Image (cartoon, rainbow, N blue to C red; front, side, top):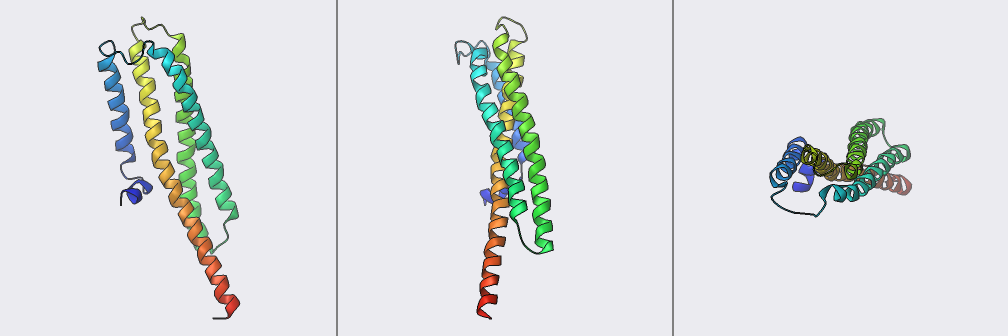
Length: 170
């Protein structure tokens, strides 16, 4: 039930906003009160590599969607449904690549900011909130991609069964 809910994208925007706002608020509130890391801005640079890796993974998923479409053979109606799903998935993956790339750039630039700068905590909170929101979006996209794969695999299974019935003359 939860899997289908995630695959359908229900609550995606709300979840993203809640996680991003919660992360932002936690950093603003905890800045200077709680020492999570000795040098938080330097730690952000390390997270930039993770964000860049997620960006590359999202791009690879985007190319995988195109591969699935190109290899699909089926009825025009099923192909249309698959194309609509793939277009939506492609748009979301493109947005995700852009979000993770932006997060990686911001996180990577954090090491050039002095922690004593008055806006350092706001920069950190904003940057980590963008990264956290991107992670939520990535989580939802993985489930949407699973739905797309299931659609393609079901179609292939149906086609294989149909060709077997034709071969046997039933």
